[in-house]
Length: 114
Image: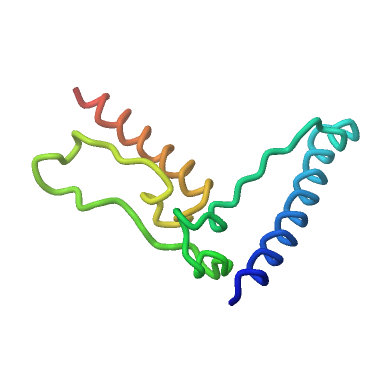
């Protein structure tokens, strides 16, 4: 893919995402939200220092990450949470939230045992 085509694709995508974001804000907060003073948008897939050309392609599935092995000296001593720890929605905010809920539940379970 040449650079001009990539830039055009990113620009069109950004415009569409911003429009969808405004529409969602209006649904959530009413018609005054369409007059927001600014909307900040950052697509890291367009940054040469943090992405590759493959990052421009949409995900067709959620990456499958999951927790590291739990055996050994660190078992029940370290809790990992984040999008990369989610076995269901890896790479997405929902994965981070689910992972955080699981980590807190595990910490509380272990806390009750002490």
